[in-house]
Structure formats: C-alpha cells, structure tokens
Length: 395
Ligand SMILES: C[S@@+](CC[C@H](N)C(=O)[O-])C[C@H]1O[C@@H](n2cnc3c(N)ncnc32)[C@H](O)[C@@H]1O
Image 1 (cartoon, protein in one colour):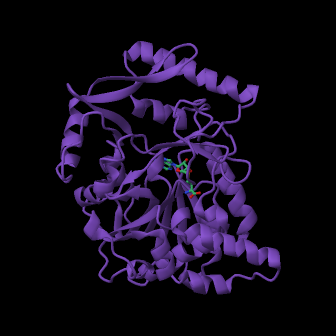
Image 2 (cartoon, rainbow, N blue to C red):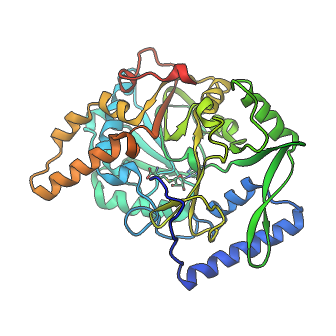
Image 3 (cartoon, helix red, strand yellow):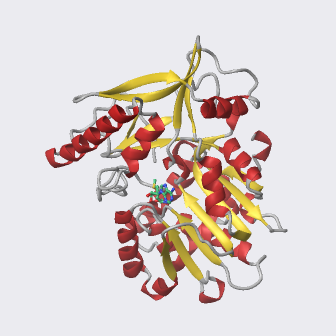
C-alpha cells in the first residue's frame, strides 16, 4: 500500500454503498448507547470485520485496479518466488513433511504464485489458509482453482489456528496492520483512551481516562523509549498482539513465522515527531488520514511496532531469527535471479517486470517502508533471507 497526500479529494461512493455504511453507523450508534463509550479499537474492528458490513466482510472489491490498494503479491510473481525460496531453505532444516500456513491470504495470489514456484519434491504437504473474511476465502478458492489447478488438492482453509502440532512456515503479508488498535492521547491530566462519538450524521473523536490495561501496556512500551511521550502526543498500540501471536503460533513445533508489514522499531514508532500516530485509511488508491470516511467502505490500518512483535514472540517462546527491510530480504533471496527466470519476451512484459522490481525494492516505494520479521522455533541454521541486513539491534 502506498504513501499519502493529505490534500487528496476522496471520490464519493455510490448510493448503494453509502447505504451499507449508514447501516454500519446505525449499528455502532446502538452499541455506543448500550456501552456509553466506543473505543477506537472497537470501531476499527467493526469497520473492518462487522458481518456483512465491514470492509473485509461486505464482499467489496479490495485488491488491484478495481479495489483500494495493491499489495506486493498483486504486483507479479517475484515476491512469492522469493518467499518460496526462503521457505524451502527452512524446510531443509526440517525432517519429514511440512506445511505452509498463510494468514489473511487476500485474493489468494501469494498462495497461487508460491505454489507455482515449488517443485513437487520441494513443496509443502499442505498449504493452509486462515482467513477471517468469508468473501475473500471464496475469492481465494476461485483463484487457486484457476491459476494452479494441479496444486488445488494441497490447499486447505482453516476456521481457526491449527489445533494439532505442525512444522513448517507461517506467512503473513500485511495482516498485522489490519489488527484493531487502541488509540491514545497524552493529556495534562494523564493518559486518555480515544474513542469514536457517533451521531446520526457524523463521527468524531472523543476520549476518556485510559483503562488500566491500556495504561499498563503503554507504561511497558515507554520503558524502552529515551523519554516519556510528551503532552499532546497521540498514537496507537495493539493490545491484542501478544495473545493473537500466541494463538496462531502455539502449535508450530519447528519452523518459522514470517511477518511482512509497514512498521518501525519502537523508538521510531513513538518518535517525538510522529506525534499524530500511524493510522492510515485506503480508499480507491488514495491513502489518507481520515479514519471516519464512510466506515466499512475503506480499509483502515495502523503501522506495526516491530519491537512489540519481538516482545510478543518472547512471551510465546519464539526467537527473533531475523529483522530487515523488504528490499534487503528480497535481494538476499536472489530477486535478481528470480527476475531472470521470469519469461518477459515482449516489451510490455519487460516493462511490467521492471515496474514490479522497482515497487518491491525502491526505498520510496515498498523497499524500506516494508520490513520482515522472522520468528523461529527449533531451527538451528541462520535464515538466508536475513544475511544481507540485520536490524535486530534497533528493536
Ligand atoms: C491487507 S490484506 C492483505 C492480504 C494479502 N496477505 C496480500 O498481501 O495481498 C489483510 C488480510 O488479512 C486478513 N485478516 C485480517 N485479520 C486477520 C486475522 N486475525 N486472521 C486471519 N486473517 C486476517 C484480511 O481478511 C485480509 O485477507
């Protein structure tokens, strides 16, 4: 997903979609009346996942030209083939059959291109997908059947994280940024939890003194900062990150969990100059900063605090085996060689490949903004994808 210009004018959605958004707002209004306060995390959860009305649950186009954003796997096959390369290196450290578990598989493009990059001898026994959105799951099923029919038998969809022990690789591209976050503000009287005030025709920010769980979580995060956050500072934190990570990795006995997302180590995340937080909304290829624009019709995201991910890994007995930027990871996985392997025999195909390479690796595109963190359990050897850059010292 791409950078933003706050002066953008956002196009009006069609009437039928506005009606969906109004329905969601009415539901949230009732919730606010029942509870007295609607936290931003509750709002974000509903705006993304409210059954039938949330951004990921209402069946609207999200990816590619018709949608709101483009992710790395949607650009072409290079990203998936580099992830397959890294995964196969991990599989060589395992004895016996191994699986891939992909979280939040979007359109299914990464799964299709990952499997396309495998040979039968170096392939997962099962490619399992854990996807919250029912309509995306259906889209993934169609795409796998269309693009890689020979691999279809190995792909399974799960309703919950695997209950049985397994070994292999967990992949999650741009999933952490979609976890609902708490929004907070430091005020002269103390820490406030930010929430959403809803009326029949508008949404706006409101706040109340932060509950203990939020105060404790921020106090914990501030321990690693050079100075306390100043009065006026507003930002986010994800309270559910640690339990969520534990739930998706508990049964992984040997292998790696690879998270790819836009984010920073903590000192940059809560840098004094980032005093307005990290929330970004995506609507029809415009990234902007109004989280209340037509709830349910736009994507809502928050950058990832990679130090928090490393701490959550520690809580759940995983080791931080690598942390680097996307550009360096892809180079270490031999993206130049993967490029040679792609058949680009027309000028148009060559231009498309060059565009893909630029988007994935240039610092002002995804190359530096996106980072990868590998969490491992029971692996002895270092991971080749992290050989060129090691940012763990910045966590
Ligand atoms: C921004 S999209 C990224 C999709 C895809 N990984 C890609 O790179 O194109 C976020 C995806 O995460 C899914 N998602 C969000 N929270 C999830 C969760 N807790 N478990 C599984 N999937 C989740 C969404 O439904 C969606 O498929």
